[in-house]
Length: 444
Ligand SMILES: [Mn+2]
Image (cartoon, rainbow, N blue to C red):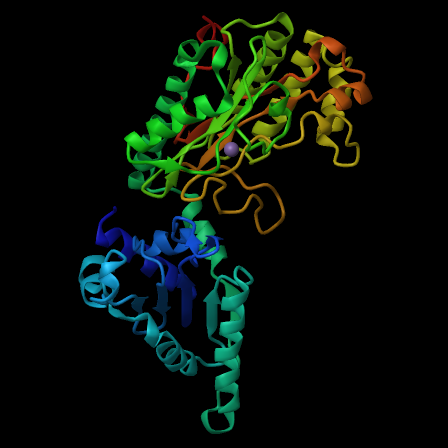
C-alpha cells in the first residue's frame, strides 16, 4: 500500500534504535474459528507496519550493527497447494517487491535465526514482542538454550532481551503524512456508514432490528473495500448500557435511542466512530437533556486537544463540563461531587455511570500502541500528528441509577459520542466531522 521506501525507512529507523543487536517480529498466527475453519487472517500490526507484507506464515528479522540487514521469511509457492489456496508471493518476488535485503522460505527460520543469535555478544540486545505469544516466547528461549549448550566452545552469553513493542510504539504514535491520508479516508468512509444507517431508519420503520442498521454499515464498508476495524456495536435502548454489547440483533423500539459504535479498516488503518440517536427521529426531553450534556462535554474535550497538552487534559475538560451539564439536567444533584468522584480513583460511585476514560490513540490498531505515560510516569504530552479519539459516554443503567439516586425518568438512557481527532500544529482537526451529531440533525 505504501512505497517500498516507506517500509525500508521504518525498518532502518527501528534497527538504528536497536543498535548492536537483532529484532525479531513475527506476523500473527492463523486462528481457528471452529473445527478446521480459520478466522479471516489479519496480519500482526507491527509486522504490517514494518513490511506491508500481508501473508500469514511470515516473520521479519532485522540485523543491527555495522552491516544492517532486513530478512523476510515467508511461504514458497507450491503447485499442489495452488488448487486449494491462492499462491503466496514467495521469497524471490517478495525480495524485489518489498525491498528486503534477504528473503527465505519460512522453513529456514530456525537455522538463520540461530546463526544470527550466535553472533550476539553480551552487551547486545535481542528485541522481540516479549510475552505477546507464548509459543514465540518458548521458541526464543529454546533458541537461546541451544546456543548456551554450545557456549563452552563458542563463548556465547545470553544477550539482553527487550520488548520491541516499546520503540515501535514510539514510532507508531506519531503518524506520517501518508498514514494521516489513509486514516482520513478511513474516517471519511466510516462517516458514510454512519450517515447511511441514520438515513435508513425511516425505511425500516417498525420492523427495524439492530442487525438492520448494522447491515447498512457493513454494506457501506464492504462497498468501499473496507472491513470493520472492530466488532461493531449496534445497541438499542438499555442494551447501550452494556459497553461491549455485540449481540446486535434485538428489535429496536420506537421511543428508544440507538447507539452505534462502528469504524472501518482501510489498508490496515482504523477509524472509530460512535453516534447515538432516537430511533423514531424524536427525542424525549430526558434523552435530549442527557445527549446535550454528553455533546457539550465531548466538544469541550475536543477543544482541549492541541500539541503540548498532557493526555489527561481533554478528559478533565470532559468531566468538568459533564458534571455541570448533568447537574443542570437534573441527572445528578451536585456537579462538584460528580467531578470529585469521577477523578478520584478511590471513590467509585459516579464512575459506575461514567466508567471509561475519554479516548485512546488510533492507527493500525483501533486502540493504538504508543503508551499514555512518559518514562517519568506523567501523562504524555500530545504531539503534532498524534491521532486520538474523544468519546465520553454516560450509561444510566436502572440498578445503578437506584443506587446513585438518579431520577426514574432517566433510567436506561445511554449516550456515547465519539470522534477521531488529529493533533495539528496549532490545535486539532476532527476527522469524523461528516457524521452528524448535532441533535437537530438526528431528528426527522
Ligand atoms: Mn473508541
